[in-house]
Length: 165
Image (tube, rainbow, N blue to C red; front, top):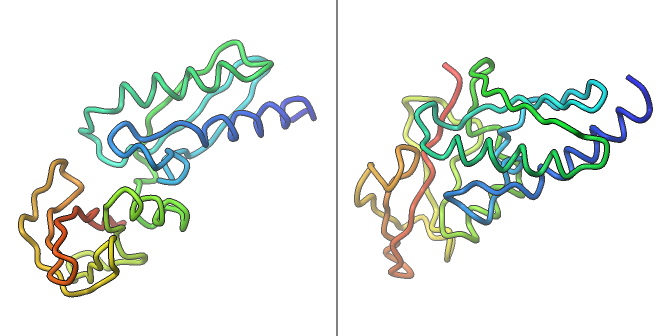
């Protein structure tokens, strides 16, 4: 890879840090660990993306936003987005900054290194209390549940852990 291609790749990665999840505006697709790779071939960039949920209705918006961000980078004439399912996305891909941004948005982040099938501890994203109750395992999206904090009296959402089987 030439020095110019390396520079373009870095600029694309930087541009992708500004692409937000359409459902959670405080978190970027990089914070969520959705970007698998950025490959530069001349003025064409190929970006592989790991969807957080294969049936996610926001994928077309995410693809549009990725293409728009990448194609604003000097030296990029065309950006192609490919959704891949191998390796599968897991919640362990969420960065520490992404976990903090989820809390800022009022969503409890999933536990790191969760073993599927095991219960998980959920702390309130507002006050940090573990004194919470699950109101509904099915939240506004397939990947979130609705909870209630008995300490600060706030309802909130929690992202469900997704691990590799």
